[in-house]
Image 1: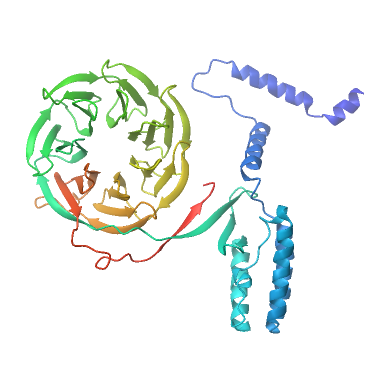
Image 2: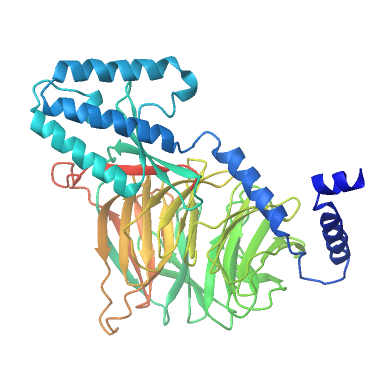
Length: 501
């Protein structure tokens, strides 16, 4: 009996030894080191995830071979110019497949021209089109599915994991027309790079922070300097004006976060705790909570009034360049130079999800003011995500530069500003890039000082502000004389929406 048991379960003893070994390692006091996963456990986990997420998308070589044989027969008959018989045969194939609901998703693996058979088309043109499509299918090793009701082409391409397949759906979207933007005013006054900018919620003034260690207040209507704050001893990296209190918050490379009272025009609080320079700030819209992040790779959540540290959000492995907050989940989102975006639960102080789609440093993020989505920017792509899970929606490709800042207004205009002085304006819905501007360095600056470090829209959504490397602030406005006739949309945007990407 023992021998039979051993023959049936030859790995039981070895599995018991593995369990004892893993239990021993689990309780060893090795801080910062996780217990390594065994190969069989990792394999089971991956197979379970693959079966759960991709069970409805499968690849059938047998079906493809049988259809290939059917296509060859049809091709032979087309050469003999037997079009009515071909059409009846194709209709019969589609009808047989539609009767079987289980095969409905696998079924119609026919080239699109067969489903849209036109008797006026010559046999030669049809044959050439079929051969070209057949070669393309053979090269890509893909399956082509056509919905006969909607006539919408769906290409199923194999992914890297063999049996897992990624579906791309081709959609045609008409971009919304937006008026182009033009330079309205150039403001000078700083003696260093303008690294950050923020607009007053009342739309009366805007604030800038610079590498000259000063914070300056400017009149939004006239561009005149109103006030200057000093107190930081290093480059100021972020400023933000509170909508709930008469406070301004600033952070700098001197490891400090400061709170300024705008009624008394002086600093009233310090927030100590960061071990290195602080690069990003975000205010919660409904709570008295401030979030900061920087070179120490952690986000620190502060109680504004008590100056107490509520949470330390750990998980990033490199400098945190961007933090954004919203009222709903996820209330905190952080982007880092480790190419990852993390969504945080503010109640527990733990990471909800980690988004690893970017391959380059994530230097800028922004929530859409009306939708439940947000956008992240890196030098590889701009990506749009859906809250609360962080579901990937689409890419906005074309801005091939190191993007330092992005801004979105209520009119569905997305602006991205880069290190090389390029400023792109996009239609949010379609991802259509309707305008490109290359900023020019001011007289007295070298040509390389044309980078843009920060940008934002004002509260009216009618003016756009940038802070630049040539120590200037530029203000843009929409061209009132532009019309869809004078500035037409070049083309119709064709978007491929990747599922499971």
